[in-house]
Image (tube, rainbow, N blue to C red; front, side):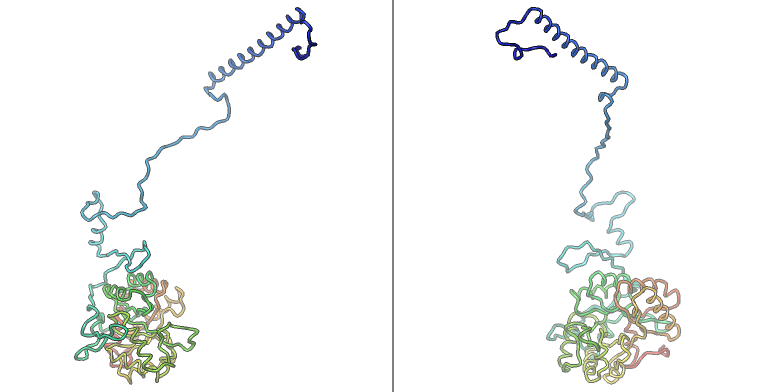
Length: 403
């Protein structure tokens, strides 16, 4: 039984001496037991530390090694080495690399939003330089802006702005890629990847077209204007708000054509965008073809419509004319495009000069680029479309008999 205390004893009762001695002895024994236990625990703990050297006395623990590294430099803002700074030994500055390689790296202009896209502009082969555009002799002011015109002595934009053909015999291919100017990235890729002898047709609906067309010509590409024309399923298929229509009066169609021609300068001719219905309607298309001739331009039929009357109308209007015999990417798949390119090459060996058209789809541009890399080594040359337009009488079609 536990020791009594003041609360368990009757009030006023004296504690006998024997009872006091017993309580005192019990207290001392209890204190000695506690102190002895503590001392024994300390001895055991000290022995463990001495034996294992573990200040945690065997408790589970882990040690983590922390390496302190210096903060890496901030690369969020791009810096450009000033031209005056010399690069480290054994390296070259970007300016030196560009200068030695002949490749110019530029960033796209005319965009409001910042962009990290980089355009690599590859210089055109053989250093071919096209005539500057616009040429004052071939320009007049219209309601929508500057328009091409025949110069004195019947000097034509078709002749002045053309890329030199380079060759006049042997297997040749004249290829136009259409639909440029709408997407900046796709247009830049086409200009950079396609051989300079490939002609490019720009849509009038693009932005900053004068600058884009000028860049293409600087790279050696001859350019055409891609004019929207009415298809049979219009308006389900709608080429755009400035489409030339069979239901419009001639003056209205010519005004739409003038708007398109005022969008940029330096083109050698017109190529249809859709237009199966318009080019099959002689009454509607004759005034258009006459205007093209009066402006010193040629007309290229892209070959997409079997019902076109463009050849006969061009002959009647005395308009330089040619027609694509093969549309490279009717089926926009890699194997189909490669098959059409092979067929195009075979026809060039048989006929001498073959004309083809294609769209500016990234896949099409990539396949044409790959196909053309060793085309010349295979004995076939690329020539600009103007070679087909300029070297023929107005309205006549080039054949295998062409020299």
